[in-house]
Image: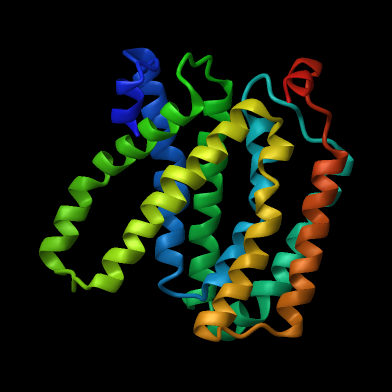
Length: 255
């Protein structure tokens, strides 16, 4: 992607913009996607997607913590409490049954760290006064994250050699092209051009797709409790988005 940007003579970040954009990528992708990879070793992908659907709560909270951001108010907190109730219904029974060291509780905690990182990196990138096109920024962020994790990956590879296969290579290629070059670039573009509340709407769609694909390919169970919890979480997210303060007029006009 960067090679194409250079060939088309698009603006490539340099110096401060280069470092800042790279840092946003390491925080967003490294913490967000990195924790998701570990969590999906322990729990089904559908359950992981449902937990990740809490991310808008982190978006609002991180925005409130950063100087100059919109502060939390009572209606927004009410929506967050509704979402937390849905999450408790989702992971509570399994967490109680397995204990604090169980896979569900561990996955929940690590995914909250990832949601915080994804939200922090996204908001920092949005506040950046970047000259580069959003797709160029997305390409740089992915490259920077790959280079950052190259060292740990080599260390892990030495201790735990990988079992290479065409199926595994195809899966990685699919994630790189669809999840990275297409999906993440689309997210950064939307985050740059649209209000955060609209850009983060994908969190409504991901769990539904993940639950359906998990059931279709791996027969991951979907019970009444998971469906009810999903509805409650979505209701909480909808309340937070609806009751949060509106975006500035300039941003709305650009959208």
